Amino acid sequence: MESLSWDYILKYVLLGDSATGKSSLLIRLTDDRFDLTEPTLGVEFGSRILSVGEDGKRVKVQCWDTAGTESFRSITRSYFRGAAGALLVYDVTRRESFDHVTSWLEDLRKHADENVSIILVANKIDLCSSSPTELPSISYGQPVPSPSPLNPIPANSSVSSSPSSSPSPPCSPNLTQKKQTKSSSKSVPGTSMSTGETLRVRAVSSLEGALYAKEHGLLYVETSAKEGWGVVDAFEWTAREVLEKVKKGEMERRKPGGVKLNESAPNKAGKCC
Ligand SMILES: Nc1nc2c(ncn2[C@@H]2O[C@H](COP(=O)(O)OP(=O)(O)O)[C@@H](O)[C@H]2O)c(=O)[nH]1
Ligand SMILES: [Mg+2]
View (cartoon, rainbow, N blue to C red):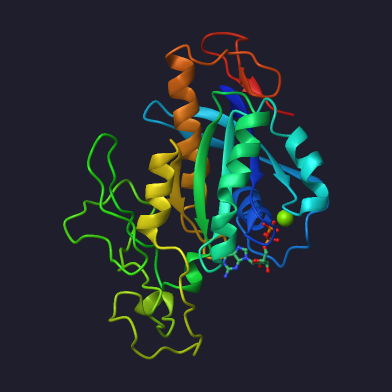
């Protein structure tokens, strides 16, 4: 079947504190649904073929979803080895899950291959915004504004290749808005809505997350596993970076579990099982 053909297989890992939404992101990727998830015991697995980059390379993402709890940490670490891509996830409404990112990153750097491509994933943005937020555009080598959760993203910031299709202002930590329905997402924040749900305080601003990512050489994306915002982008942007590294020869083409190239024939893609 053509739809199951692939050019590359990439091993991914999902890591970060428990309850940040790792399993939900994986279910959104593989099944495009959002369910109540059970806490992950040890590791779980899912895969999906994505079309990546302008030349539409078919990449089979094989993703290991790890448990974020301390008791499983040594098992979790053992899955880092050989990963080509890693999604380091925090919950934008829980500050401590962001504070722990450094420790997860240290673990990953220690146990994964040095060329692993890492994306910092700010998840659950639906809890504090009624539509995907614009990402601050931060270029390497450019002076950056100082991070402050109280500072909105500068008005002159250009928008990067955000998953957003309908931009909205970033959430302010001091702002509690009434959540709007999707259909009313272009109306003024704070106006009434049918569900009556209240938006939560955002504990980590877009700018702070993006700056952290820049400082540590990570990609950055904002997601909602619940709404499906940015989820495919998170996996695809990481795959793009991996394929760039493969192109530049920075990664071995055949690493057990990491990057596997389908070399069966130049014009003949592989078949997945
Ligand atoms: N509102 C909202 N809830 C989410 C999102 N992602 C996960 N959750 C919820 O957060 C809880 C923990 O999610 P789970 O995927 O099990 O987190 P994990 O421990 O990191 O794998 C569950 O109740 C999910 O329904 C999201 O994007 N938005
Ligand atoms: Mg889980």
